[in-house]
Image (spheres, rainbow, N blue to C red):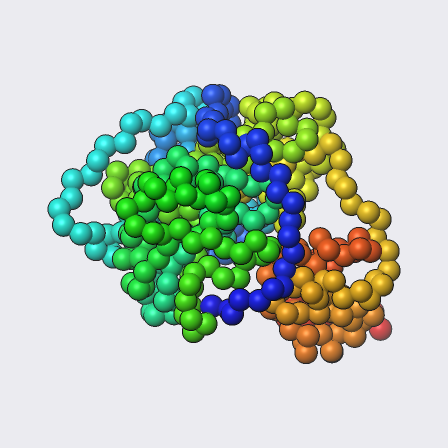
Amino acid sequence: MSIFTKRGVRLPLMKEPAASRPVAEMETVSRVTLPLSVAGDSSRSCRQALGIYSSVIRGQVIGLPEDEGGTPVLSSVTGVLAGIQPLTHPLYGETTCAVLDCMVAAAAEPVLRPHKGEWKPEEILGAARTAGIIDELDGLPLHAKLRAWQDGSCNFLVVDAAEQEPYASSGWAVLNESIEQVQEGVALAVTAAGVAGGHIAVKLPAARRKELAKRLHNSQLFQVRSRYPARQYCHAASDVVVCRIGVQACLALYRAVVYGEPQCDCVITVAGDAVATPQNIRVPFGVSVKQVLHACGLSSDPGYVILGDAVTGVAIQDLEIPVLPGVTCVLALTERKVSAPRPCIGCGRCAQACHAGLLPSEIAGRLENMHYERLSTLLPTECDGCGACSYVCPAGRDVTTRVLEAQENAGTIFLNWGDDDDA
């Protein structure tokens, strides 16, 4: 774990009124689109398990993993498999998807699974895989993450519900609704990963944090620092390696182990000045952004729709893009307050805000001036894309994108001048 520093920025919080409202449910769902394979990721490739026009029920396997340790794709609704189609998703890239026409979106009442004694690691990992749990923090299968940490690479497990970006409050909503079950999920994840312990990291007002703490039978809430992004997730020495999972994945783990319940939906924050009723809403995986916005209502035509929060989200033009694991916020804004980019003034604010201790403006400058051979010395691969440098830039430059461009090439860029035959 990195030592605490003062680097970072303070973001204005715009979580209300969504954060104070109970989690809503989608009343109607017409169609869902679920990825069966993700280009370039063999661990997420599945083959079609059902024929076209087959009836499916919620939680039924519709995609079988190509490899033995892969994660199956489960139907998030009850309906009919209408077809298979390609899709370019902002988070998943090029993917092949199953399209299901929905008849019923609601889930049946869970039934407690009989079990005696403590759950063993393999039982927990097996339940996570069968339930198709994907961690919302990074879009990776939860069972694979927990198994990888069994090698001792991780000392302490953190369930990350900090949500430091301005609008997102879905993690808060899940904790408020089911913190007792999340706490049980922490214990299961700790057992599966074989680590020393774990707790829940939050960034909450004192009154709300105290209310949640009263519902726990021991102290498991850790308040992260107020600067964005967080670097310290627990009270521990600098040699302790912290691993993180999402709060929704943790809750899904508990319900998969105890009830045998598949992960078929997620809670997302829908907010922005174009949204009539900002709220956290539970939606089946694969529901389009258009359906989500319709469920919450629009007070005006949005100029921008962003998949994700304001700092690290991606603006989308196609509202048929589905909500998939990894999406915890959708913003509809009448306008996007972004100043026209100007030349770098050398103020150094991006370096002050960078929690990784990088020199973002210098990396961007070397990239723009084609000094590619000197990029690697500035360690662009250490950037995690938090967006703090772009947020504080008084010149309005998208510094983060330039640093990530250098990172994608591992600090080295090769120019393609054409085929030899063209010489």
